[in-house]
Structure formats: structure tokens, C-alpha cells
Length: 199
Image 1 (cartoon, rainbow, N blue to C red):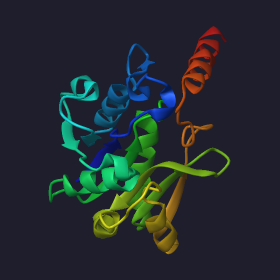
Image 2: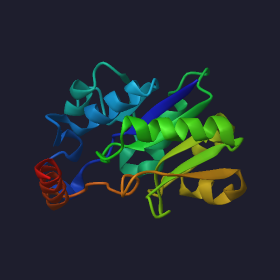
Image 3: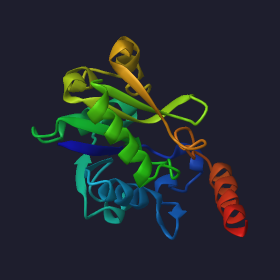
């Protein structure tokens, strides 16, 4: 069973009081949009959050929530909490960042298809020009290593150690790299969406 693990336990420090994961995408909080898209890809969705009283928990209350108690220690600790919170029947997990509104259901389906036909155990999305980004699928083979990470670099150390076990999947345009961390990022991105609709 392949599942989606959305990392959504960060502090949005660069948003100056706003929560980037609750910014509106098509009228809904970004984190919910990502969870819904993963669900539409027939993935069981697990979301790592700071605590069950956080506003993000309400936005995605229909999904499986995992609390990360050590978020302040870096992204790797949220990832560890998420991996440890997955049920045993999960054979692979697609790790998603909660602030990437360009990731679509079709993008996730492309990653799943590649995993099933490639005989590789790490599947990493890239931009259309081949720049590595997110999401990344990990086979259960690497769950143990993922739980031993620390700091704020996420899973990159595991990827770097196992390049022979890795395959890339190009996603459209900049889907794999667009993450929105500041109010300015969100303003610019929302303006770009309006321009697309006006074409």
C-alpha cells in the first residue's frame, strides 16, 4: 500500500503572522487542497501537524493526523514522527511538503506509475528541465534510515546515499520546486494564477 505523508508541522516563521499552509488555493486552505489531491490519487493520506488543536488540524480533520512534538528541532523530526506514525501495511510513502500548491493529482499518479514499473525504491520528482525537487517516494526499505535523520535538511541524506536506487520523474513546468514561504511568494503566485485564467 502506497500512502501520502504531508509534512505540515512547521512554524511559517517567514509569513509574519500568517500561516502559509492555510493560504487559499482555489478557495480552500493549501494543506487541504494537497490532501484532497493525494486522496484523489487513491492514496491514504497522513498529515504531520504541530498539535491537534492547531488550526491546520481543523482544515484537514477528515484525514489521518500525526502529531510531531519536536518540530522545533527541524524538518527531519517531523518526517520521523510521520514515518513512525504510519501503519505496518504501508509499503511506500510519497513525502509531500505542505506549501507546494502546484503539485497535482496527475503528478502524484506519475510518481506512483514510475515506482511500480521501475524496480527502483526512491522516486524523486523534478522540474520539466530536470532539477530535483518534491515530492519524493520512499519504499519501506528506507523507513528505518528516515527515522534516524536529524536537523532541517529532511530526507536529502538518504537520497544522496542511495543514488543507485533512485529514479527521477519530470513534472510539468516548475511543479516540483514551487514552495511558497513568504507573503510575497504567495502574492506573486496568486497573481500568476489570475494571469493563467485570463489567457
